[in-house]
Amino acid sequence: MEQLGWGSITLQILGHFWPVWAALIAVFAVSWVNKQRLGLYGKLFDNWVGLIGLWLVLFWVFTALFAHWIAPFESLDQMAAMKNKKPGWPLPDGTGHYLLGGDRLGRDVFSRMVYGSRTVMSIAPAATLFAFMVGVTLGLPAGYLGGRFDTALSFVANLVLAFPVILLFYLLVTPEIRETIIPTALAGILFLIPIVFFIVLFFSRFEQQPQKLWIYLSVTLVLGLWAYSGLAFNADPLGVFYMDPNLLNIFVSVVFVNSPTVFRIVRGLTMDIQTRDYVAAAQTRGERPWYIMLWEILPNARGPLLVDFCLRIGYTTILLGTLGFFGLGVSPESPDWGLTINEGRKLLSIYPHPALPPAIALMSLVLGLNLLADGLREQSLKD
Image (tube, rainbow, N blue to C red; front, side, top):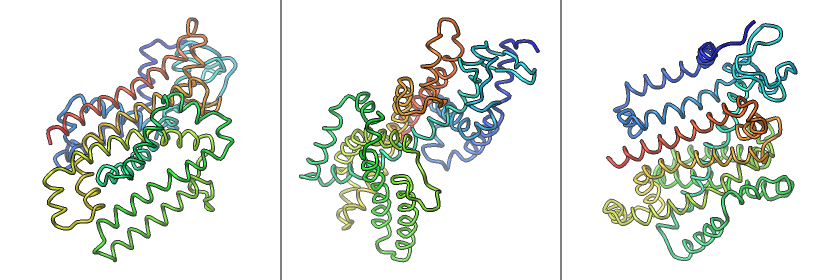
């Protein structure tokens, strides 16, 4: 077999991504037909910037989901004869090619790039969502009630934000910290807040409907405490919920670092929105404070929060890539994009192909998140 040219390499790569193309076509077709009923998401289809961003983000989401079908090799498979081979190089047995070449250990660069998307997608969106739940749960009462509660929480948030973000990440993900009780203690506190959030959410909404309330509360407590015991303390007897200690350390670090910023954003939005007439009308009706915060103020803050959510996933993706680049928080054999870029840059002047694909993947995902945030911001301003 001969080495493939760039035309053949491109066609084969596009062919490997067939599950992603199928999923994208299905999602976009259904969304386009129903865009009038999909609120802010549906309005993205009238905004080319947001649409391109959505396409890039969903591309990597589906790549992470279907990585096992897309990648022709496992991320750890090694062939000594394929060390540092150029893109399109044929395998010794003639059964295929390394489409983007081989790295210094003879692993397929294309397959590692594909599997690397799972590392990002398993941490950045979920950790950012947890951070938003923490920030919303604490920011709403701080902005609405004010007083000493607001002063105390604002002081703690400012204390955390006083540390440079990168240095704080480095501190939290070092092996020395991982061996202490700090990650587990932080997980025990931070992972409990989403459960509190949903309990208060349902109680404020269905307080006058006890049958519905107890159903929602029972489901929340059972599923929430089950997941909480497994994720925070690895104590799930069924083994359904589990988080590797290394992954837990990174996850908790992302939540801890992002929560104060979200808190300040939510607090500021709450202080602004609570002066609106519809909040005064709810107060006149005698609605309880938590109902006003969660069902009057929070829905009207969704635009800025959605924009910040997308941007914050992008920031987290860059931070995770930076940690991986310096070998912090990920195992040495991981296909993490940052780690792969670091491994490839050592021979960048001779063999550029191992470092460029993960760098382009990281750049495209962050670009997509930024474009999606711009699209959401433009459409939310029109509401």
